[in-house]
Image 1: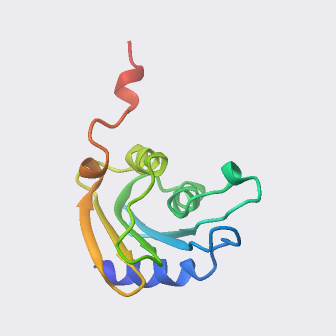
Image 2: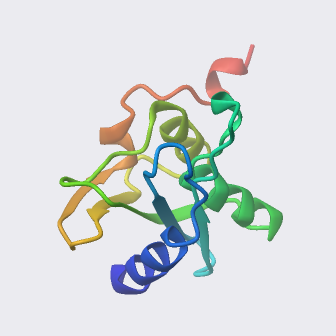
Length: 131
């Protein structure tokens, strides 16, 4: 089931805007509806203003009207699979349950599988905002 996610993440990675770091990342996520959304990192000369690939894919999903993640695939041009940054872990947890599979990969095909809960134990959620 992840093969289609992998291909789309690999494809979108080539369109990343990473002129400063040269570190391109692609992300594809499958929504609970079955639709696939992609994102790539978009750097900015004012470094903190850039956008991560995972955040771009989430924004595309929400813009299309989906609000629940079923599976995540992230690929980078690195020697080992790279996990989402801390901020993206929280963003993914906003739209996905702890058991959502997350596959991190290299462009050469090395994969590491985990879950949202393993990536972000003790995630902050809406329950903390109540009462």
